[in-house]
Image 1 (cartoon, helix red, strand yellow):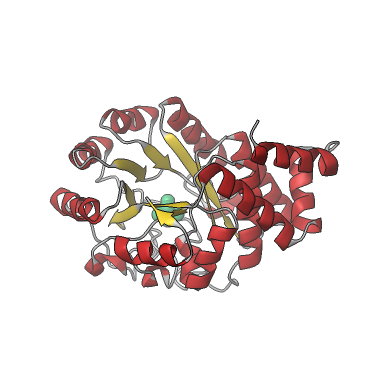
Image 2 (cartoon, rainbow, N blue to C red):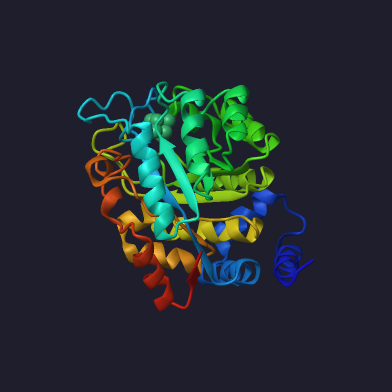
Length: 333
Ligand code: SF4
């Protein structure tokens, strides 16, 4: 057992030994100060991951989506949005430029777009793998066989957020699927050997601290390799457009608790935090985060992948982030 794990365990046994996981998470959320929790998370991050920040270039290659999630700006019923699909050649070209700049991982993200079936996407994955980079996919729910085809093509990692573990809330917010189906997909991905990532949105209308504690417990139960935690940001062209932004300090505290529970996971400082303020995104690196995912999608498409407003303000170049982290004593990979 390393120092961070024994630190975590001694904290847990002193404070919460008779309680279930969810109960002590709730206790951390309610009774332990932001400073205490984030300091613990930062110390675990430093011990396990050092001062290295992983840069992952994200390409949002299609904003078509067959789903109608209530919180999402690219939901199928947002008819005000112009839709785009990058071609296979365009995607590979952008990936090549990113790899030449220094990025070691390319993340391919899209809505659930039936045009981009597993067979078509696997050709792109094969091409990008020739660039000697890791490939992460984030293209939603597929069948076991489709995930297998993409894995076979060389995809290394897969991101599929479950957003909330509250079954009723999930059903209301994601009417095209179920929480069970989502969890099943995550288990398939693990079974197929993907490094598997998921995550949540903090501040969804109808969410409670109890349900957030259950979300963190579920991320732990799934033993995720990657965990993303971002605040809810209302999009005006969605049914949730009138609700307030999620609490950013609660978001950072949840990030920190998740780091304590999943010391080895890769955890991004999410774009959603950066959309609210670049300082918040940097602050996440002192609350447990060790990954940043600059958006390298071509400018002409970037503004159209607006899952929430303000998403595309952040800088994308490798050298920009290298300098930012150099200035705070971190190195990038
Ligand atoms: S959250 Fe994902 S699945 Fe839901 S509408 Fe947005 S892109 Fe589609």
